[in-house]
Image 1: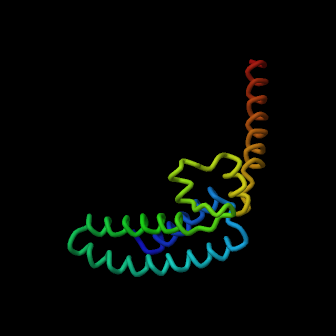
Image 2: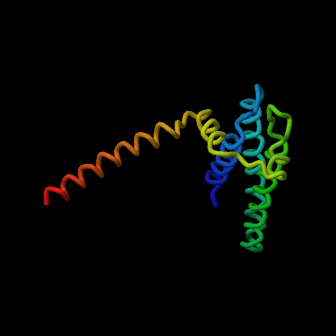
Image 3: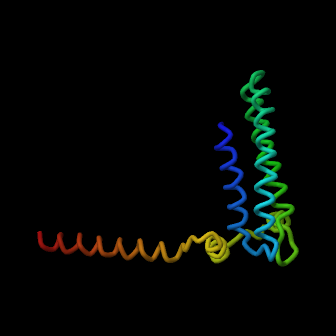
Length: 139
């Protein structure tokens, strides 16, 4: 796995947590920036060691990478700030998973309007279905 793909995976993991649990409070954006920077640097160092370990065993190199990402996921879940002062890790342990409204609000933080995109696509699909029905009736 190349280093760029690993850094993109770091960003995607952070974005997944922030979209799923968007109530981060006033320091959430700072946490996101600092955490992305720290974990990207950590992955760069782990990538070097994983390449050295990969010389001995390819499976062992993969295990080092997976362990680094598991550690990152656990650390982000344990330390990500929340308005209700309950960590994401505790929420996951008590099975308080995000619902659709929470996910929509989280995606809205990043400029993704899920409802608007779905409604636009449904309208386009409806018009195509109506055209097809009219064509079938003509035949």
